[in-house]
Amino acid sequence: MSNNSIMLLIMAYPLLLALAFSLLFTAAFMLRRHEGITWMSSHAMFFYVFILLALFALVVSHTDYASIMAKFTFHENYQSPIEKLLWIIFSVACGAVLFYGERLWNILFATANPQSPRKTDFSSGDFSLWFPVMSMLTVPMEEIIWRGYLPDLLQQELGLRMLSAYLLSAILFGLHHYHFGVKTIAYKIFSALLWSVLYVRSGSLLVCIAAHLTSDMLAWRLLFRIRKKSASTRLTLSL
Image (cartoon, rainbow, N blue to C red):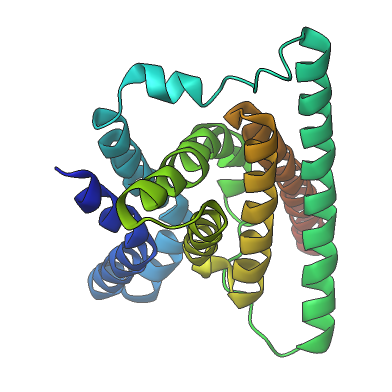
């Protein structure tokens, strides 16, 4: 498969993901009606990981090991352990700011649009227990694909400037979070742009991964607390 084909496949990923979910939800509804929809909603993230893993495997199979490892190496200006540690600490702080910023963004959006339905509720079922595992698996793959691989390919194959390549990659990254709703797409694009800046300035995807994982782990902590509170409320009502 050529670089152009892989690039188009990555760019079409949000559309392919939407199509896959539509087919899966339709099949679940036809087989088990509303029970099938409920089951599919609670297991949708597993299918997302499976599809992402396939895309990641395709990217890795067309990239030599050395070039992937090079994307985890800091710029020559930041070679001392202290400088690398400071970059990681800074990225963790950025991830925390992004999480609390997104939480505030969601609150403001909910206040302005009280009738707007929630697209996905990941605090129910067992998903909140799986979330850390999912994040540790998906975050490195997402960063390698959307920060480390696609922007370079867009510059090489389409002749885009660096800024345009990272902007387009960020938009595509935001679009494949459509299942969280429009408000999340906008914030994910903003997050992706910040992670791109971290990568370009530091030279290492480790910085992006640290920021991304911090944001996700704080989200998991919130989901877990919501789940515990919900379970406690149901227990109280049953008594």
